[in-house]
Image 1 (spheres, rainbow over the protein chains, first blue to last red):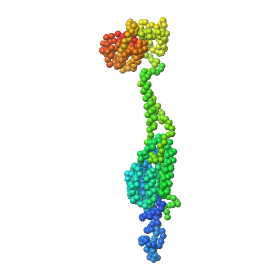
Image 2: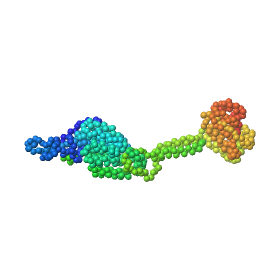
Image 3: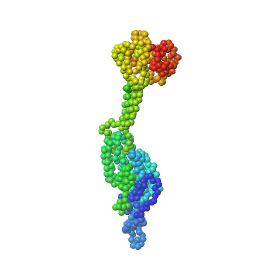
Length: 311
Length: 272
């Protein structure tokens, strides 16, 4: 299992990935829970037959096998048809599905520059580096009701730079799009793709989309990005809270609202967790005061027991 | 020594203090706008008991103090009995003495009171008519040497004016330097008015019409008195009026006649 980690310079995304985080990325590997069956060469474990890199076994020829997979030299020796099976590494397509609705512009008063979208950009940049290092194919989709900003999947450093340019151009505005607008997603996000959804998870439609994608054999990872204010509600005094997407306002005293809010928000998060678990979607949460690779560590850390891929 | 206000009505302007207080309270209730995407889980709730809380005490106190100071300035504060070396001139009214001579002891006491309030360094000049009634059959003894100036009493005073209290017009003309003093004369003239009204008839016309203006304003046509508070000489128009029988009182520091207090002009009478 030769993994070539290209020695990339990473100038383009220098500001997106802090050096400490970049150092920690070495311990991460994008992987899927189930084997894939797509052609090509990648890191993912596969039971596909054919010209693989590592020989697995011979088995008897069965009608329907590709004549190219028959080992003709063995046939010459043994006069019987054997099919050479290989443990093949097929490539993975990683999709970054980024919520670009106005709620992604949320940040904390302490650090107004670090918006949810900025954190999503950093996570996406990390994933791009990982995918590039593993030789996977990857693409980026950003969605809001102004339209779908889709960069078709590709591989290589130029594809990474294209993706980074698109990430930089992203702006958080509008709301989550309606279902019809999301139709192009189904054409591009092929089955067995690894889809990382970067969102706040506040849009019901976004969660529903994740569920439907997961039901249609896409492997989903939900990375929920929450601000410190949403987690701790540390505000003091009288506020006019305004929803950036709908413009609705709630007036009140922060201290008085705190307990009720925290309880309801914790319940909502638990609900989301259980919904996603039911659909087989892994959920990882990043709070804006944490290092950006926190959810990736949760989802993709090398574990001694599992290793890369599953045999 | 006590503080007094020349224009106490200005204290009504203290009502303006409510303004910064109101501003302070309303500004505090202004809510800070906060973008909050997780609004769905937020329920509006006010503080159970909204206390009337004032945050920036110092700022509020400064604002209130500033306003109070302005109001006090408007009310024209002055010190009564402020010790000073200004010479005093007391003019004993010869015109209407019976108003004060009813109680001779009191009359006598008032001299002593005046003597006690004055600083030892202040000189006292008293201008009295030839006859000063109502005293306790002896010379007034005071702690200081008093410069008594006896002037001839107006012969027809007392009878004629008592019978027919004619409205007199007093013109006060002052320059910039004497604007302060003119207010005191103004107040004094008003006080005369009040006093005579009590005595004559409440419904009668005021005995004095006071006309205060700058030196360059012409005199009213029927002026009886002119109080000239300026270091300049009388303008020709006023000179003519004086020659025609007007009465002029002029400030000592202005005049060519160096006497303390106020000097009668050629035709001035000593009634006041």
